[in-house]
Length: 71
Image (cartoon, rainbow, N blue to C red; front, side):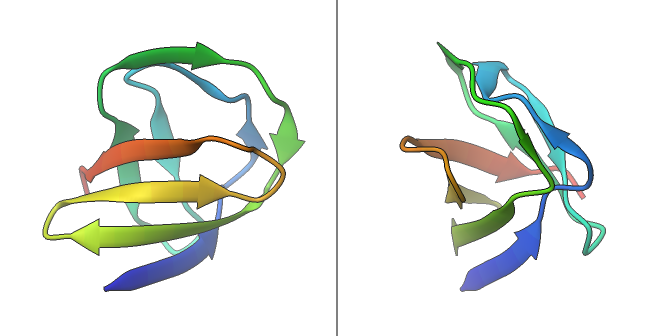
């Protein structure tokens, strides 16, 4: 399944298990640690899901982010 939405507010890249709230109400958390800073305000995201986990692509951010759904 594919989820398309936007980050609700600021996106500051990746760090240690960052939580990402989407404007559609879903909440996803980065899996593991990887630090990379990139500021964007409310960028579009696409998440390719596999059950409760997935890979998130963020507009203007070159790396994909492994995530798991919290809510």
